[in-house]
Length: 279
Image (cartoon, rainbow, N blue to C red; front, side):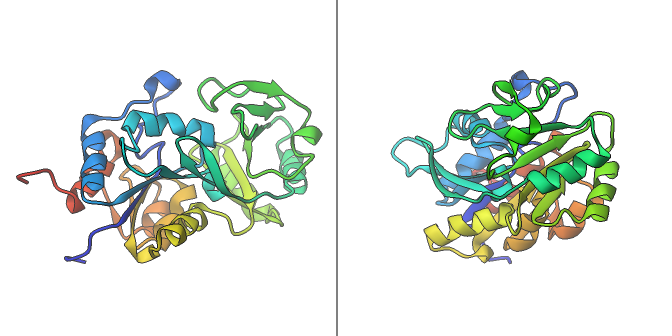
Protein backbone atom coordinates (compact mmCIF):
# COMPACT_ATOMS: atom_id res chain seq x y z
CA UNK A 1 0.00 0.00 0.00
CA UNK A 2 3.01 2.26 -0.33
CA UNK A 3 1.45 4.29 -3.17
CA UNK A 4 -2.07 4.22 -1.71
CA UNK A 5 -3.72 7.28 -0.23
CA UNK A 6 -7.24 7.28 1.18
CA UNK A 7 -9.90 9.18 -0.72
CA UNK A 8 -12.33 8.82 2.19
CA UNK A 9 -11.42 9.02 5.88
CA UNK A 10 -14.21 7.57 8.03
CA UNK A 11 -13.87 8.60 11.66
CA UNK A 12 -15.67 7.26 14.68
CA UNK A 13 -16.26 9.94 17.33
CA UNK A 14 -16.32 8.70 20.92
CA UNK A 15 -13.06 6.95 21.77
CA UNK A 16 -11.52 7.98 18.44
CA UNK A 17 -11.87 11.73 17.97
CA UNK A 18 -12.94 12.32 21.57
CA UNK A 19 -11.57 10.72 24.72
CA UNK A 20 -14.06 9.15 27.10
CA UNK A 21 -14.01 10.76 30.52
CA UNK A 22 -15.65 9.22 33.60
CA UNK A 23 -18.84 11.12 34.35
CA UNK A 24 -18.39 13.01 31.11
CA UNK A 25 -20.66 15.82 30.05
CA UNK A 26 -20.72 17.82 26.84
CA UNK A 27 -18.00 20.04 28.37
CA UNK A 28 -15.56 17.20 27.80
CA UNK A 29 -16.10 17.16 24.05
CA UNK A 30 -12.72 18.47 22.95
CA UNK A 31 -10.88 18.01 19.65
CA UNK A 32 -7.12 18.17 20.21
CA UNK A 33 -5.03 20.37 17.91
CA UNK A 34 -3.21 17.31 16.52
CA UNK A 35 -6.48 15.63 15.50
CA UNK A 36 -7.91 18.87 14.11
CA UNK A 37 -4.78 19.53 12.03
CA UNK A 38 -4.69 15.95 10.69
CA UNK A 39 -8.32 16.22 9.56
CA UNK A 40 -7.56 19.45 7.70
CA UNK A 41 -4.44 18.01 6.06
CA UNK A 42 -6.63 15.21 4.72
CA UNK A 43 -9.04 17.80 3.37
CA UNK A 44 -6.15 19.74 1.83
CA UNK A 45 -5.17 16.54 -0.02
CA UNK A 46 -8.67 16.20 -1.45
CA UNK A 47 -9.94 13.42 0.83
CA UNK A 48 -13.53 13.29 2.02
CA UNK A 49 -13.97 13.29 5.81
CA UNK A 50 -16.97 11.21 6.91
CA UNK A 51 -18.02 11.15 10.55
CA UNK A 52 -19.31 7.67 11.38
CA UNK A 53 -20.83 7.04 14.79
CA UNK A 54 -23.49 5.32 16.82
CA UNK A 55 -24.58 8.78 17.90
CA UNK A 56 -27.85 10.29 16.78
CA UNK A 57 -27.63 12.86 13.96
CA UNK A 58 -28.12 15.77 16.35
CA UNK A 59 -25.29 14.45 18.52
CA UNK A 60 -22.90 14.58 15.56
CA UNK A 61 -23.41 17.98 13.97
CA UNK A 62 -21.71 19.80 16.83
CA UNK A 63 -18.62 17.61 16.34
CA UNK A 64 -18.55 18.66 12.69
CA UNK A 65 -18.78 22.27 13.85
CA UNK A 66 -15.88 21.75 16.28
CA UNK A 67 -13.80 20.35 13.41
CA UNK A 68 -14.81 23.28 11.16
CA UNK A 69 -16.03 20.91 8.46
CA UNK A 70 -17.17 21.42 5.85
CA UNK A 71 -14.94 24.39 5.11
CA UNK A 72 -16.30 27.53 3.49
CA UNK A 73 -16.90 27.03 -0.21
CA UNK A 74 -16.70 23.23 0.03
CA UNK A 75 -19.44 20.68 -0.54
CA UNK A 76 -21.57 19.59 2.41
CA UNK A 77 -20.27 16.94 4.79
CA UNK A 78 -21.39 13.32 4.63
CA UNK A 79 -22.27 11.85 8.04
CA UNK A 80 -23.14 8.25 8.96
CA UNK A 81 -25.22 8.27 12.15
CA UNK A 82 -27.06 5.77 14.36
CA UNK A 83 -24.59 3.00 13.46
CA UNK A 84 -25.38 3.31 9.76
CA UNK A 85 -29.18 3.53 9.98
CA UNK A 86 -29.15 7.24 9.05
CA UNK A 87 -26.96 8.89 6.40
CA UNK A 88 -27.22 12.65 6.05
CA UNK A 89 -25.58 15.74 4.61
CA UNK A 90 -24.65 18.78 6.70
CA UNK A 91 -25.21 21.69 6.82
CA UNK A 92 -28.12 22.02 6.74
CA UNK A 93 -29.10 18.54 7.91
CA UNK A 94 -30.61 16.58 5.03
CA UNK A 95 -31.31 12.88 5.55
CA UNK A 96 -30.52 11.04 2.32
CA UNK A 97 -30.92 7.46 3.56
CA UNK A 98 -32.65 5.89 6.54
CA UNK A 99 -33.36 2.30 7.56
CA UNK A 100 -36.06 1.43 10.11
CA UNK A 101 -37.32 -1.76 11.76
CA UNK A 102 -39.82 -3.13 14.26
CA UNK A 103 -37.80 -3.22 17.48
CA UNK A 104 -40.59 -4.25 19.84
CA UNK A 105 -39.90 -8.04 19.92
CA UNK A 106 -36.17 -7.61 20.55
CA UNK A 107 -36.71 -4.97 23.23
CA UNK A 108 -39.23 -7.21 25.00
CA UNK A 109 -36.77 -10.12 24.89
CA UNK A 110 -33.99 -8.05 26.47
CA UNK A 111 -36.26 -6.54 29.14
CA UNK A 112 -37.35 -10.02 30.16
CA UNK A 113 -33.77 -10.59 31.33
CA UNK A 114 -33.02 -6.98 32.35
CA UNK A 115 -36.38 -5.62 33.57
CA UNK A 116 -34.81 -2.49 35.07
CA UNK A 117 -32.95 -1.50 31.90
CA UNK A 118 -33.27 1.95 30.37
CA UNK A 119 -34.68 2.20 26.82
CA UNK A 120 -34.27 5.13 24.44
CA UNK A 121 -35.21 6.03 20.87
CA UNK A 122 -34.13 9.27 19.22
CA UNK A 123 -36.75 11.86 18.39
CA UNK A 124 -35.79 12.13 14.73
CA UNK A 125 -35.72 15.60 13.28
CA UNK A 126 -35.87 17.46 16.57
CA UNK A 127 -33.11 15.87 18.68
CA UNK A 128 -33.53 14.42 22.14
CA UNK A 129 -34.88 10.99 23.04
CA UNK A 130 -37.99 9.23 24.19
CA UNK A 131 -36.93 7.20 27.26
CA UNK A 132 -38.65 4.94 29.78
CA UNK A 133 -36.48 6.49 32.53
CA UNK A 134 -33.80 9.16 32.58
CA UNK A 135 -30.32 8.03 31.47
CA UNK A 136 -27.20 8.87 33.53
CA UNK A 137 -25.91 12.38 32.89
CA UNK A 138 -23.84 12.77 29.72
CA UNK A 139 -24.77 9.41 28.18
CA UNK A 140 -27.27 10.70 25.61
CA UNK A 141 -27.69 14.22 24.27
CA UNK A 142 -30.70 16.47 24.25
CA UNK A 143 -34.02 16.42 26.08
CA UNK A 144 -35.23 13.12 27.55
CA UNK A 145 -39.00 12.64 27.23
CA UNK A 146 -40.41 10.01 29.60
CA UNK A 147 -42.50 7.56 27.56
CA UNK A 148 -43.90 4.05 28.09
CA UNK A 149 -41.80 1.36 26.39
CA UNK A 150 -44.75 0.18 24.28
CA UNK A 151 -45.03 3.69 22.88
CA UNK A 152 -41.26 4.11 22.44
CA UNK A 153 -41.12 1.10 20.09
CA UNK A 154 -44.73 1.26 18.91
CA UNK A 155 -43.69 2.26 15.37
CA UNK A 156 -40.66 1.52 13.16
CA UNK A 157 -37.43 3.10 14.43
CA UNK A 158 -33.88 3.38 13.12
CA UNK A 159 -32.09 2.52 16.38
CA UNK A 160 -32.88 1.58 19.97
CA UNK A 161 -30.56 2.00 22.95
CA UNK A 162 -30.89 -0.36 25.92
CA UNK A 163 -28.75 0.47 28.95
CA UNK A 164 -28.50 -1.33 32.29
CA UNK A 165 -26.27 0.53 34.76
CA UNK A 166 -26.46 -2.51 37.06
CA UNK A 167 -25.02 -4.91 34.47
CA UNK A 168 -21.71 -5.26 32.58
CA UNK A 169 -20.80 -5.21 28.91
CA UNK A 170 -20.06 -8.95 29.13
CA UNK A 171 -23.58 -9.56 30.49
CA UNK A 172 -24.96 -8.00 27.31
CA UNK A 173 -22.51 -9.86 25.06
CA UNK A 174 -23.65 -13.14 26.62
CA UNK A 175 -27.32 -12.16 26.46
CA UNK A 176 -27.12 -11.25 22.77
CA UNK A 177 -25.50 -14.59 21.99
CA UNK A 178 -28.21 -16.47 23.90
CA UNK A 179 -31.20 -14.60 22.50
CA UNK A 180 -30.07 -14.23 18.90
CA UNK A 181 -32.41 -11.18 18.77
CA UNK A 182 -34.10 -12.29 15.56
CA UNK A 183 -35.06 -9.54 13.15
CA UNK A 184 -32.41 -7.14 14.40
CA UNK A 185 -28.68 -6.62 14.49
CA UNK A 186 -27.11 -5.52 17.72
CA UNK A 187 -23.84 -4.25 19.08
CA UNK A 188 -22.59 -4.00 22.67
CA UNK A 189 -20.74 -0.89 23.82
CA UNK A 190 -18.01 -0.39 26.43
CA UNK A 191 -20.57 -0.67 29.23
CA UNK A 192 -23.85 -2.56 29.50
CA UNK A 193 -25.10 -0.62 26.48
CA UNK A 194 -26.89 -2.37 23.65
CA UNK A 195 -27.65 -0.75 20.29
CA UNK A 196 -30.38 -2.49 18.27
CA UNK A 197 -30.55 -1.78 14.54
CA UNK A 198 -32.14 -3.18 11.37
CA UNK A 199 -30.63 -6.41 10.05
CA UNK A 200 -27.68 -5.79 7.76
CA UNK A 201 -27.28 -2.19 8.88
CA UNK A 202 -23.91 -1.06 10.24
CA UNK A 203 -21.42 1.74 9.80
CA UNK A 204 -20.13 -0.27 6.82
CA UNK A 205 -23.51 -0.23 5.07
CA UNK A 206 -23.83 3.50 5.75
CA UNK A 207 -20.37 4.15 4.31
CA UNK A 208 -21.25 2.05 1.28
CA UNK A 209 -24.09 4.50 0.53
CA UNK A 210 -21.68 7.42 0.84
CA UNK A 211 -19.08 5.82 -1.43
CA UNK A 212 -21.70 4.96 -4.04
CA UNK A 213 -22.78 8.61 -4.11
CA UNK A 214 -19.15 9.73 -4.42
CA UNK A 215 -18.31 7.18 -7.11
CA UNK A 216 -15.72 5.53 -4.87
CA UNK A 217 -15.07 2.01 -3.55
CA UNK A 218 -14.45 0.42 -0.16
CA UNK A 219 -10.81 0.14 -1.20
CA UNK A 220 -10.60 3.96 -1.17
CA UNK A 221 -11.58 4.20 2.51
CA UNK A 222 -9.45 4.58 5.62
CA UNK A 223 -11.62 3.87 8.67
CA UNK A 224 -10.59 4.45 12.28
CA UNK A 225 -12.60 3.31 15.30
CA UNK A 226 -12.47 1.76 18.73
CA UNK A 227 -15.78 0.04 19.50
CA UNK A 228 -17.61 -3.16 18.67
CA UNK A 229 -19.89 -1.07 16.46
CA UNK A 230 -16.81 -0.31 14.32
CA UNK A 231 -15.98 -3.94 13.50
CA UNK A 232 -17.93 -4.16 10.23
CA UNK A 233 -16.56 -0.78 9.11
CA UNK A 234 -12.97 -1.78 9.86
CA UNK A 235 -13.37 -5.06 7.95
CA UNK A 236 -15.13 -3.42 5.00
CA UNK A 237 -12.75 -0.52 4.43
CA UNK A 238 -9.63 -0.64 2.31
CA UNK A 239 -7.72 0.04 5.51
CA UNK A 240 -9.36 -0.40 8.91
CA UNK A 241 -7.44 0.80 11.95
CA UNK A 242 -8.37 0.14 15.59
CA UNK A 243 -7.56 2.57 18.36
CA UNK A 244 -5.01 1.36 20.87
CA UNK A 245 -7.51 1.07 23.74
CA UNK A 246 -9.97 -1.07 21.73
CA UNK A 247 -10.92 -4.51 23.00
CA UNK A 248 -9.19 -7.47 21.34
CA UNK A 249 -12.30 -8.31 19.30
CA UNK A 250 -12.06 -4.93 17.57
CA UNK A 251 -8.29 -5.07 17.10
CA UNK A 252 -8.64 -8.51 15.50
CA UNK A 253 -11.02 -7.06 12.87
CA UNK A 254 -8.58 -4.29 11.90
CA UNK A 255 -5.67 -4.18 9.49
CA UNK A 256 -3.59 -2.28 12.02
CA UNK A 257 -3.71 -0.77 15.50
CA UNK A 258 -2.76 2.83 16.24
CA UNK A 259 -2.10 4.64 19.51
CA UNK A 260 -4.83 5.15 22.11
CA UNK A 261 -7.23 8.06 22.02
CA UNK A 262 -5.30 9.70 24.87
CA UNK A 263 -2.18 9.52 22.66
CA UNK A 264 -4.10 10.93 19.68
CA UNK A 265 -4.08 7.67 17.72
CA UNK A 266 -6.44 9.04 15.05
CA UNK A 267 -3.95 11.84 14.32
CA UNK A 268 -1.07 9.35 14.31
CA UNK A 269 -2.80 7.21 11.68
CA UNK A 270 -3.98 10.11 9.50
CA UNK A 271 -0.47 11.61 9.59
CA UNK A 272 0.84 8.44 8.00
CA UNK A 273 -1.10 9.30 4.84
CA UNK A 274 -1.33 13.07 5.21
CA UNK A 275 1.95 14.11 6.87
CA UNK A 276 2.62 17.59 8.21
CA UNK A 277 4.58 19.89 5.92
CA UNK A 278 8.28 19.16 6.28
CA UNK A 279 7.73 15.78 7.96
